[in-house]
Length: 258
Ligand SMILES: [Ca+2]
Image 1 (tube, helix red, strand yellow):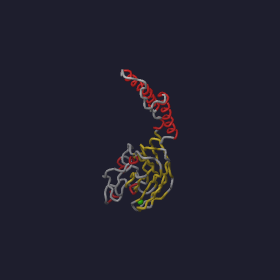
Image 2 (tube, protein in one colour; image 1 turned 135 degrees about the horizontal axis):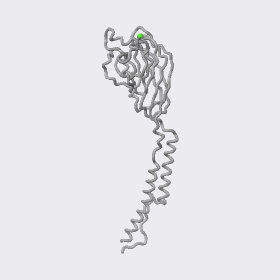
Image 3 (cartoon, rainbow, N blue to C red; image 1 turned 120 degrees about the horizontal axis):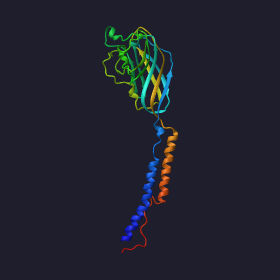
Image 4 (spheres, rainbow, N blue to C red; image 1 turned 120 degrees about the vertical axis):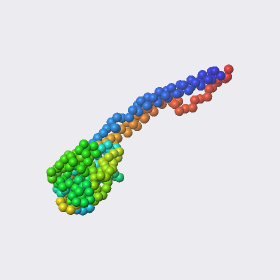
């Protein structure tokens, strides 16, 4: 009986140590390619030169088609070049897939009557909108910068108030920031909508650009590397296991108890 037990253990050991070693080597070879985690930024622009209908909810739309190069967005920023009219008249959003960020919502509007309902009277925007902008909320930009009737410049946070531009007063929660796109993909059409909701003064969308940062989509070489690693690991296991890795150990032959 002692002989039978020794032989059974030896069979187990001879087959398993090589399998374990092969699995270990396979695991070491399985280190994921670091290049796949690259963070990239895509920037595209459009120069439509569109006049925004004055005092109308119809507005204008313009699209930018981004490539499918970003698999998980970490930050979106939008630059706007809008000339003429009044900054306080304008409402605008950026839409992609199911996400929608309110970029402008009647800057300077603080109430529903009198001058408070008009918003600021500066003549345009040449700004970049980014959630992390240190200048803060574009809705109340005159508390930081006096554009003096000219074009507002600088980097600002989007308005973010998902409420009607006919009632917004600046006290609402900012729930529609550009972070709504975080974790999404870059692929497809990004649509900018702008409307001028107060009669008097005409604005023109000269141009706009979209900057998207995020984790790059793995290139085809990544998946080839994954397949190669798996095949190599399997070959190592087969080689070290001597072809016995998956085979049921044979019953001891010619052994009698004693
Ligand atoms: Ca107007």
